[in-house]
Length: 116
Length: 112
Image 1 (cartoon, each protein chain N blue to C red):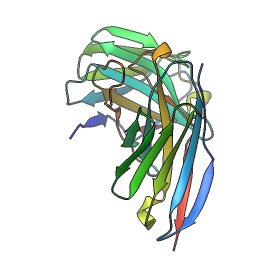
Image 2 (cartoon, each protein chain N blue to C red):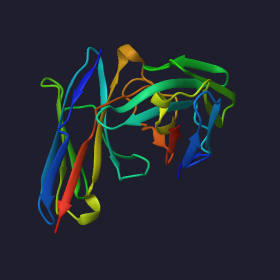
Image 3 (cartoon, one colour):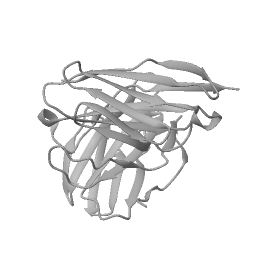
Image 4 (cartoon, chains in turn brown, red):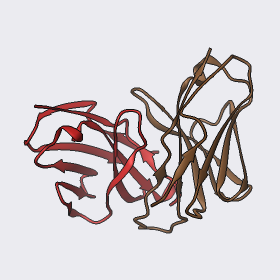
């Protein structure tokens, strides 16, 4: 079974702090993703990485950066945390795929981040 | 861009059948996924459709009509543990084969 592990289930930080969220997958997947999930807005893609050191902005990258130094690990960084970044953050991974592939994304359990 | 619509909330009774609809608008449709997400947990993959028709997996089935931009997830013999959110997600070749666009999810409440 694919295992995607996020470093913390719950995290409380203060406004202005630099926050690191870590994600590790154990299935040698090329792709890794960071989403945030908010009520009524669903899952929104923050950043996507398709290989080590490669990244692509998602729909809402402002205020975030990412790092992928090793294939199994993808980090999300909040450079200067703000209260509007309070949310559930979900990491996912998947195999690299071409058209019509049925390979799903596999998700971690999420980190509920509160910025005070 | 993509637009994906699902009902916000549905209720059903244990033992019944429920159909959760998803409509989408994409310019380069390349597959539709359904996920289940229990409160506070990770979304888990349920089904994948890329061709028209019904895919059956035990109590769960998923249907796709590409010409109508429409899918549904059918849950039979509902159990209390089926209370969860159900997420519809679409892959669009115009945004790349690696990414999915998610609907806002349908929260299903199963009562005794």
